[in-house]
Image (cartoon, rainbow, N blue to C red; front, side, top):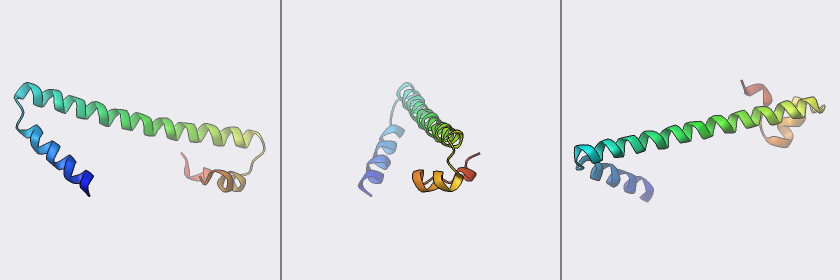
Length: 76
C-alpha cells in the first residue's frame, strides 16, 4: 500500500510541473511502459522457444507442464 501512496504522490507532484518538465515526465513514463511491454513480450517468446526445444527433444505437453509449470497449449 505504501508503494501505491508513493506513486500517487509522485503523480500529484508531476501535475505541478512546468509544461516542459511535464512533457519530459510523460515521455519518460511512456518509455518505461514500453520497456515493460517489450520485456513481457520477450519473456513470452522465450517460453515458446523453450517449449519448442523441449518438444523437439521428445517431451510431451504433459511433461513440459510438469517441468515448467506452463501449459504449452495455452501459449499462442
